[in-house]
Image 1 (cartoon, rainbow, N blue to C red):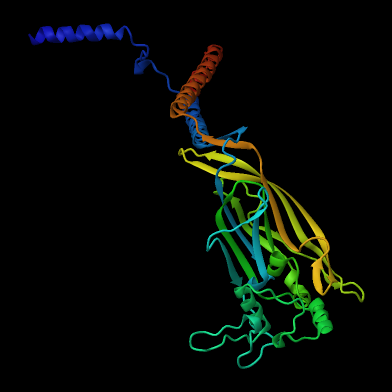
Image 2: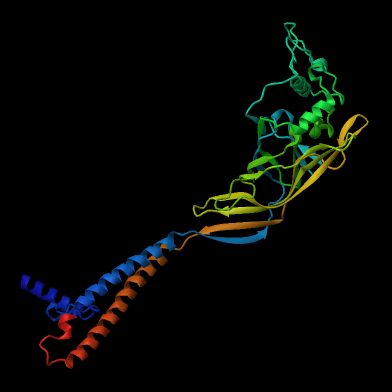
Length: 403
């Protein structure tokens, strides 16, 4: 029984040999040459280089851009994220206002939506008084009968601002006494303020045309200033550093026009002749920004909705004159003004990568192609030297032995 089973197995193997496309020559009939060895090593090096190149190409992520109509342009809010630093402006005088130009009304963010963080500090004040100075119209008495104290001009301004009381146009507070001509003269030649301010904005706003105003707090509220405030030239240096400004999340791999942008204001604060007119060079910084809605689809099937920006900047001088006891800008309000609008188009960016099957196919093609091409070169040189060797049969040593 074992004999017949072995014979049947041998018969099946004999039949399968007929389908063998990879016939093997007997090792005794193979001729190995030094040239073939060098060619094999070079072929292996070429395969490794091409395999690395193909692997790098497979791991590379490509991006495809597509432009469509933005059907979700309205009826939803977007996340406004901004961080801006003013190294020469104290937080006490800065104000931020976000305006919805479509409905012509101000947008109010919830508590914590706009933060003012001091950078450095300069607490010295030449007009400070000892004891407990009065706060005038902003004075309050607590339950214990104690009155709040305002020992400096800055304290009075802060108390008025907390109570929402408008400052008089002509400052006559004792803590704010100063020689007007001397104050302006000193301001023109004084060093810039050593206290700065960092503004952080984070909140949701309607996706409509709007404007962001960053200026002197009193100008933002009342469009006018007092003679004391106008005399401080260093309070109008709007040199800034924009750490970031985004309408949505940050887009990976796409440069942001606003990220780490710096501007050094080189304007001069000067008085025109003997009049009360004042000129601020490049004090009005205007940005016209077009926001392009962008949907970024990552390789991990994560969708990021944000915006790209097209920005045009313009710098203007501001002329401030004295009219009816008020300092009012004749042209524009000093500060940074960002006008933004949204395009009706949506840019879709999709990350993709080659399939693993195509990568395997290319690797097999590399291996097979290099071996086939190397074999052709080896056979060509072997036959060429064999034909040359026929003419050198007179010598005992043939080329093939050295080959």
